[in-house]
Length: 477
Image 1 (tube, rainbow, N blue to C red):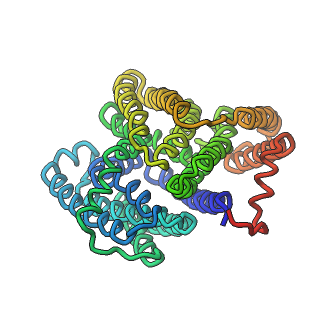
Image 2 (image 1 turned 90 degrees about the horizontal axis):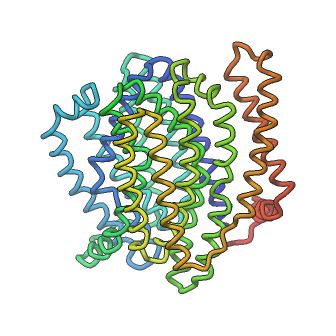
């Protein structure tokens, strides 16, 4: 299967799963309110931070070593053993500081955090193994199934009065079921590792952990710091905006996830030109959805957030800033992805370290001054700093020709789309008074149609990519 086709399967599955999540989040926002959504966001953030030792760096190490094809079963086993040990230690820490955890979240949270931690940790190891075996498309299909289960269970339990407990239970049930299925579909089984397998994983992880940590900082540190300085209602607003932005990043993440095992294999085979070509392709299409998403956030962002309830329009300004941050971050991650693929996580480490430091300082300073707007600006600025650092290293290690022309055509298409959508909003607003959801769907549909029509007309590269990755094209790549 072509990488492009696999990316499309991954992205479509994630889009479908996120669409289900969108419906569920709208329901929760209207039934439970922004404060409960904020508490749930803080629980998930805590799970991420507490489980950081078992998840950060280890997943990338497992994907890298399994993708190399040598003793994959033993590397898989080593990852599971280490994850189990760290989960036990983390559970003891949570129990020790239980009162502090409950006070921070604003509700009884300890019994929620512990099972989620265990399930999410082991699921991350299984996903890493799937990626390493180049079964990304299967993992993406599990994603949509898991999202469907999660949304259905959460909605059912919230409807009968379980509140935040229902949301956590739905998340846990989904993680458990998809983890079981993932273990079943993986074409390798964990085997007893030897010392050298742990050493090899840690050798890669000692640098790659910061890359994963930077990913965890992105979208989690701001929520965590917001929990200290602002009310849970504002945290809920921010988390809703963030969920929409994550939806827009799916395609770029799909490219990164799908392309990494192939780049790793080509690098192992000594084919540096192939790695460069794949990196250029990744950069070319990283902003395919995000760039028009930024224009759309400016023009119809308030209408989109109104779907969740009138209080959520407080995040309109944050929406556009976070989409711009996502554009910058996605380009940066494609370059970092290439560094890891050529087994140079030390280079990625330097770029990611700059992001982590900048993100930490800017979040504390700007959130204290400007609450959720400050969090969004901090994410955007720290992402920009990281991109500059990655580009500097990329020029030293790769002969990359940045696809600036194609990115410019995407920007032009997005601007033309924006003009049409703005006109449509102005002309049609009176006809959709009282029907905000329908109006948003109409405007988004018009925008998507215009954007892709214009881009197809002006971009030969885009037309070629579409042709090469049609389902009828069975050429293997």
